[in-house]
Length: 400
Image: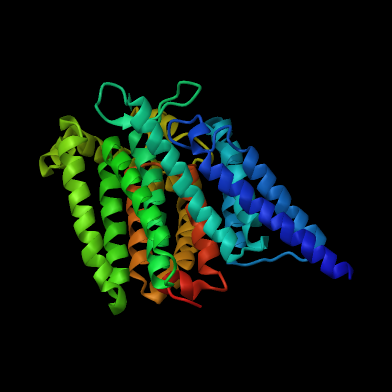
């Protein structure tokens, strides 16, 4: 009887933790950080970790697998690097990493259900929809550019590249639920709803002017169509959807998108200064890494590049940032963890998930998303989906 009560309490705590994490993502528009980093947005992660600790104490069991072991090792490496290079440490960066690693270490001890995992996916859609509406209503532009974004209550304006990344994930999960609804022969009302939401979010992505988000959205769309194409009975849907998407795209391009944004669709925009500058940032980031290959700890990369190689900018690359902070040992541990994480999806040969992960990896080269809510919560989603009891239904989009 006691065990039954403990299981019920643990299950309720797990549901509460997923709800908190979902709200954490859905309320991204209250984040108050220009790159959607955790910043002072850590309170939800504290509740998530507290629920996880509660589950461990009630059940009397702690689940240990590669995910929390490797994240614990990464945490120790970061702390050691930060101790040895204490003068370089940024307190905000250190606190943010502590919050993320505490979350990641406790993740395997939650009790994920299909419903709770879907809640996390839908939280990205809700957050993206709210951000899209804010773009349409308030029409905030980024600096002197004509790229649209959102502004927080503290007047912090979000970098459109980071906002575009978050919106793209929301768009991808809209496509996921469309494919799932078709594959499991559910109500077509859901298909219409998610299709409408996908169009709204896609329009917002276009207005951000983020070329990385354009490409990632294209990859996700290709993955979606290839996934549906594998199911011969649903190929008729591709023709119908293709026609609708073509019409909507043409109308939006002609009537809604500003001329300044249209320029970013052309190949000529690839020759602008921003890409050359990004390559320069990467070069100096790697030069700084070679000076101290075992890492600088929880330092801000802008400080590292300015102080050690005289380049006044940050790395503008998630992987170079991780390389600078965790060093060569920590970076290869992260790489191994990520490969373990995505291995089930590639073994499943699911076009949807393979291209989503490919786009996710690509996006990490374009922005430094090392403390970003979209980056780490997506990794949590991949862990839960990859270890789900109904993994086959997630990758094959069929009835169980």
